[in-house]
Image (cartoon, rainbow, N blue to C red; front, side, top):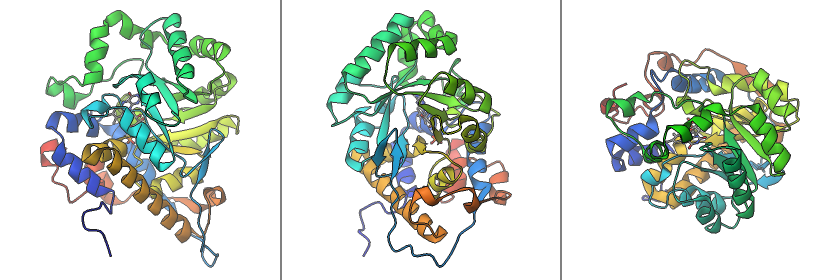
Amino acid sequence: MYAEREYMTLHEFVQQARINLHQNTWDYLAGGSETETTQVRNRLALESLAFRPRVLRDVSSIDPSGDVLGERKRLPVVLAPIGSVESFTPEGGIAPAQAADQFGCDHMLSSACEPGLEEVAKSVSKPSMYQLYVRGDRAFVEDVGARVIEAGYRSFCFTVDTAVYSRRERDIAKRYLPRGRQRAWAAGENARLYQAALNWSDVENFKSKFKIPLALKGIMTAEDARIAVEHGVEVVYVSNHGGRQLDHGRGATDAVREIVDAVEGKAEVWVDGGYMRGLDMVKAIALGANAVGLGRLQGFALAAGGIPALVRALEIFENEVISALGLLGVTSLAELNSSHLAAVPPVPSTLNGITLLNRIYPHLDLSDVGY
Ligand SMILES: Cc1cc2nc3c(=O)[nH]c(=O)nc-3n(C[C@H](O)[C@H](O)[C@H](O)COP(=O)(O)O)c2cc1C
């Protein structure tokens, strides 16, 4: 029997988030930059991959777990950093940290959300990764690095696709500044320029000062992946920021193959952008990625019902992964490879200009979203 009041499908969280959120916060969460072409391409890249299933293999016992930075996790998913997450759920950054803790996966705390890194660290048994937007000089970065290590985080991340804050036109048109942006503006133009000035010598400096594993989030080319590996980075995180930064970019999943090849196993490769389903994660792992980041799905679940809803969303996501593995004829993620995938034209409905959410959630009334 299905429990009537419990979430049973992932799109139910989106529906509930749509009901709960004010139009401003909904658009901040759901939208992308400028024409949202990159955001749509994130889905197109995933939908241009079809599965090649194998049959008559014993799949009576399936294990969807995976290694993330040397630790076995219930699923190789990472809750991606979400700035202003306190606009979706009152606990702010504590919510993804606790949900990840309860479920058994990793999370990333955004430096653009409340509360601060020490408070979030204290709220969980083991904080995972801290993501920094640079708002000061090297002494500032080194101070944050030392605090992150002292607070017990196991890894650190620079987001590198945000040299300039993009034109988020849904927000601009409504003259809406998300909370994280309000704090960035209050810090002043000089503070904001440090992120723009960030370069490889800062990565080198960080690696020389700190032993903590480092991720660079927002790598989209084999060229940059190679430089990252030369700098001893532990995680090359393939991402276009969910289509919220450079518009008219490639879908993130389209960059995975070349980056996995360039990295040659010398770092982990994580990817995010449009990952809304367990099957999407299975595709990324088959392409050679080690883990997948969840951005908007996490935000929708938190907006729908806070920590318990996010834990429930992860359970459903896991069920989808298990179902996909069984139907592909494998019993673990390690058995997946490129032979399980075929390049196909995306289903025609994705090509008619309708965005991500209309595509995945056709029953939602999104007429007021304007796309
Ligand atoms: C509301 C929102 C806030 C975000 N804030 C941050 C942030 O503070 N730092 C960061 O590195 N990425 C941030 N991102 C990008 C996500 O970490 C992630 O790369 C992206 O959402 C993945 O795409 P998806 O939403 O399609 O899953 C944000 C994304 C959203 C939707």
